[in-house]
Image (tube, rainbow over all chains, first blue to last red; front, side, top):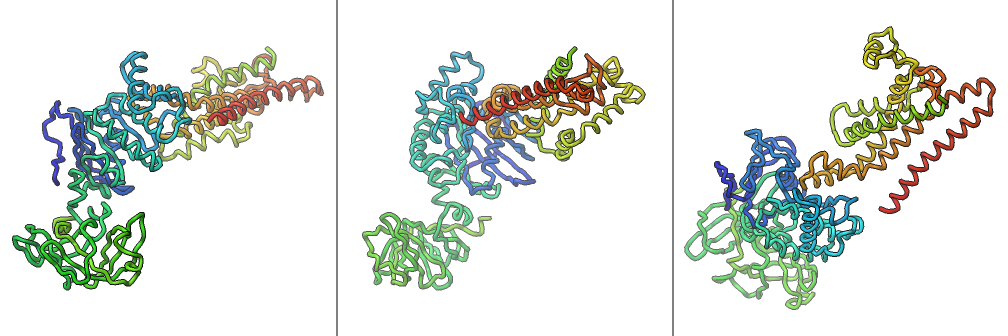
Length: 379
Length: 219
C-alpha cells in the first residue's frame, strides 16, 4: 500500500484528516482501512455490493460495525474497543444521498436552512442563500423538491450538506440518478466548488471515469476488503494485483513468467511460445506475473516488422472489429497465444476490408506500455 | 344527557386518548423490525375481526368487581368500570385500536428512511426530526385515524351494550337508542337518529377522501 492508513495511536487534535478502520465479521463482511486529508477528494470505488456505501454510512454514524475506529477533525467518532460511538447528530457530517433525500414538504431554502445549527433565523436565511448561490440555485428558493429536476435536486442536496459547515463531506453515488449531460455539468460545478473546501471529501462511485475527473486519490473496495489506496493515476496505471486490474476494467491481461532480466529489458514468456520484452524491472527469472498491456501502447504494424528496442511485434488474425464513433475496436486472435488482444485504432487508418474477420493483422506493443503485476504478491 | 351527547362525549374521549397511542404504536410498527412483530400486529388488528360481543364479554370478565383484575381496575379508577361511562371509554379505546394504528402505520411506512437519515445527519435530534420532518408528512394519517375512530365510536353497538349497559344519560349512546326505539316500535325517532348518524358518518369520510385527493392532485 502506498498510503499509511492506520490511525495514529495518539489523538492529534490538529489533525483534520479522516481516518477509517473498520471490521465486520457478520454480513456485510468488512475489512477496510483508509485515510483522507483535508481538501482531498477520495473516491471509494468498487462494484455494487462491495460495501462502499456501508463504509460511508458508518462514517456518518448511520450504521454499526463489530470493530471500528474512526477519527475526523481531531476527534474520535468511533472506537468500538473503548465503547466510544459519537451520535450521528454530533459528528457534523455533510452527506449527499444517492436519491438526494430532500425534505419533500419543505422549500429549497428551508431544506438548506434546517441543516444550519445555532444561528438566528436571519443568519440561517443568509447562509442558506449564499450556499444556494454557490450551487447555482438562486431564484428557485421557494420551490418544493417535487418541482425540481434531478440536477437541481442534487444541487440543493449539496448546498444542504455544506451549509452545516461539516467536518467531512460524504457523497454517496451522487451522480447516478441524473442524465449524462447534467452529470458533466455537475462534475464541473463540484470541481469548482471543492477548491474552497478544506475538509476531507469521500466520493462513493463505481464509475472509474468519474474518479479520474473528480478525485485526487482512490481506494478500491471489493467484497468489503480494501484492495489498494493511492493517487488515482497510480492505482489506475499500476494496479497491485490482477483482481484490481480486472475491477478497473483493464483488458489485455496475460499470464506470463519472467524468462530473462538484464539492464536493458525484462523478457516475459507467454504460454511457452511467445516472448514479450518490457522495461527493466527487479523481478527475478521464473517469477509468475500478469502482464497488463495498455490499449494506448498498441498500434498497427507492417507484416514485415520485427521486434526492436522499443516495440514487440505480434501477428494474428482479426476476430472482430466494431465501429465505435470514429474508431475501430478490434479484437485480434494471436498466432502464438490463446488469449485475444483488444485495442482501438482511428478508422481512417484502416478500411473495413482490412478488419474483416479472418484478415491477417500485425501489431506493435510498446515496451513501456507493458506492466508486470507480480502474482505471488497479490491475493 | 341525550344519547347524542353521550355518543359525542364518548367519541371525543376515545379519539383524544387513542390518537397519541395510535401514533406511537403505528410509528413503532412501521419502523421497527423485531421478532414477534406479526404477533403484535395481529393483536392490534384483532378487534377488527372479532365480534364486538366477544370483546364485550371479556371486558366484563376483566372489569367484574368480583375478579382480581376488576378490583385492581376499581382501585385504579376509584370505582368499578362495569356500566359506567369511564368503563365505556376504556372499552371503546380497545375496540378502536386498529382504526387508530392502521392509518398511522401506513403513513409512517411511506416515509423513506433516507429522508429521516438526512435529517439526523443535518443535526436534527429525534424529536426535531419528528416535529419538522415526520409530523408534516403524516398528518393525513392522523386525520384518517381521527375520523375513523370518531365515526366508528359513534356507531359502536355490541361492546357498548355489554359493557355500558343501557343507562339513560350515562351510557346510552345513539346506536343503542335506535335499537331501543325500534324495539318500542317508535320508528320515527329511530329514523331521525339513523339519518343523523348516516349524515355524520358520510361527512366524516368525505373530509378524509377529499383531503386525500387534494394532496394527490398537488403532488
